[in-house]
Image 1 (cartoon, each protein chain N blue to C red):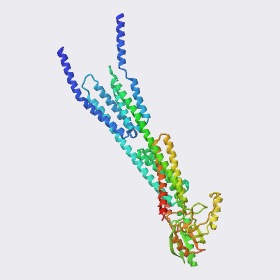
Image 2 (cartoon, helix red, strand yellow):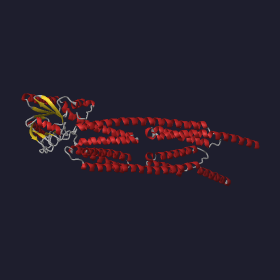
Image 3 (cartoon, one colour):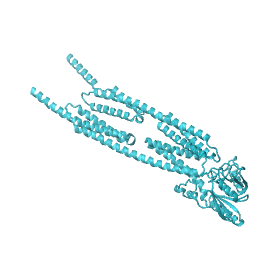
Length: 196
Length: 379
């Protein structure tokens, strides 16, 4: 009786050990998946598309490895661990690249808004100095209205910037720039004509 | 026993060599599939053909798994065909996703470009209308908003965001349409049979008076931007004129910028120094009809209580600017007013009509249902 019990204990121990060796590296896999999710959440799709592709490829390689090991009697997850680590690293890079891309988009939008503000201020200053000769009142009123609309666009652009909608912010800023430039050009032309 | 082991080892060695030769075939298929999926992603298939891209990505994963299974076989000769076939499925799916993405993106780009072109035309038409028809502050703001929406749509188009480009272009078109509707409403008077008949009657009576009395009379045609001097019933000279910034309307109250329509007379001649506009012929606006119209508008509530009837409508100098800038007066160039001054005096009839023939504005109003555009240039 006694030897049989020992034998079963040994067999059971070996089975447990074998099963333990063959378990997928769940923590590594979860970390790789989390890295992909974080990259996506960080806006890598919009701001670091190439880096996100690298993460997706790494994740695909990991998935393939895990699938290949599934159902094997003696599964080895050493390569899966390597791939998971690579996917995690790629994910972290994508998060960093997305942050940098986002900063750049933010800087571009901020610069566009600042340019629009400068142009608007210049246009308003010019309008104040515009020739107030006979019959210019209606034109000046019309230009004031145009600059009011440009000011509204800048306010909208700032709201979009605050909401991290950088393309929207740039679109609004560009439209304000166009309006302010049109008014500036019109006044400068009128002033030049008056001088001439 | 030893021979058996040697044969087994030799066989395995041969199989291993065969397996080594097959591995690059699988790798090449894997690379081709990977490249195809990468191409599809670069073409933004996730936006334009997401289902197809996901299918391709799943097929790529299947191929990679199949490759790994074959690489890990105890028997070293892999089933290359199975792996290559799996990667081929992925490659085909990725090419399909790429094709659909390109087509969808191209269609969206074309649609957006077409809408932006429509918006550009609509805004340009509104700009032309704006130079011809006076816009109040609210409608001026509409035009500015239309321009802003158009500018935004161009930015979105450059960014490849065709959805937002389309939305903004549509806004620009809609805002321009409101402008167009306003222009149609304003222009309708110029196509109204009764109004046209009244203007014609005023003109005929003025010319007849000039013939009968053997004296000078003036006819101002607002749409034509001309002042015609009649003598003894004959047109002897025509001058180009600038008008009120809201000339297309009939004057209703002070400050509306409209040039009045009606039959007036010169009541005062203002020489140099008596006017800031070089020389001027003051008219008897408001006349009896103007006062009656004004009183009716006040009773009907179509005029605010604070609106006065206005006055000081003159034919004066400082004109020739090529645009309508006065508050309702008729402006000639200084040489022209000099010339006119020698030909007319106090009491000269001055008849102001919207038009003395069926003109472009009337035609625009007639075509309103077909979306006709008005040439913004002055005639």
